[in-house]
Image (cartoon, rainbow, N blue to C red):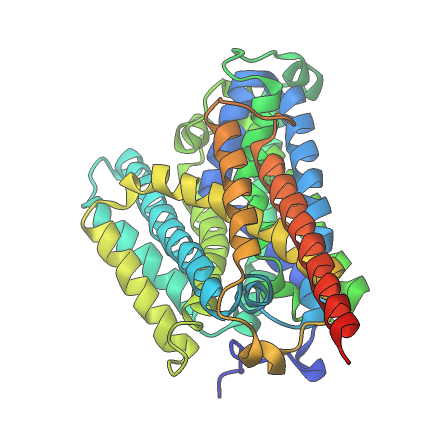
Length: 431
């Protein structure tokens, strides 16, 4: 009997778990091939010292947002997609969920395809011959699907088993790297200056910010606020460790290609295991979250049916070879998804005074225009900073959240004042 995943209900007390168990699942999201590539590119461009500072700073900034979004999840016991309905309206939330769902399935397909390409490259280096890329991609997507479709409990148990093994393998890579170069020497290497420090910080924030935006999907299982805050250690500590461990060998060889670095270390076989385990864990979370999104559209379908459906779409994209063309579109979707967190945080803590009840979802308005105006303003701010027009914090993701939160707060205050004024006028005109 599969554990109920509460995609259409609040998580009850008996289904909650310790915050550190949730934090482990969150930490696994940061240990994936795209993140390893990003950390490696920053290390080659800026050197190891700046990379360490950039990764830690970025993760702590995202962790601050995660402190708020995780509490929203633990107090409401609702998924992100249900939380969004309170600020955007029932129908309005479906549009938000569509954007999030397309993005999550897209990343699931693209990351699986990237892993397939890396495995193909490794097999070619070891054996001299290899098969078509799509075979490796489809195989990777299949095994990821099997651990994501059965809900949080199965995903959490899988991560608890595989993360220690991944940590041991990463530590082995780190030990081999440090044998070839002293830590002090590695920290002193400046890099090729192909990226500014602020751009490095912004890149990391942009890559991991959705872990905080979608935190309620996981922290709705937290026992209380303290356990929700413990789960944020996955972002504040787990993410920097994964990024820095990937950056060290890249800085050593001045090479950002993960497979080439592992080949230079003489461990292409170990590299395959690391990439498979890490991407398997994190990409399973993408598919899991996408099933929660799809549940808002297909209310009569089970989590397993929704997961299989999303996986089939992703596999088709990988088979047709179009997954790697999604990246630009997925980056844009990620930028415009980020302001959603600023809106629902303000709505939960300030506007609704922390009162989110699943039973009241049915009576919510279809659309709340103020949330959409704030979303558009935040998205414009994020896109403007990303593509070089203007950024007042030099961190586009932070810009988008602050603009959206301030705009929504201002409109909510104005709406409350209007309602009070109308109520007073009605009382004054009453006989």
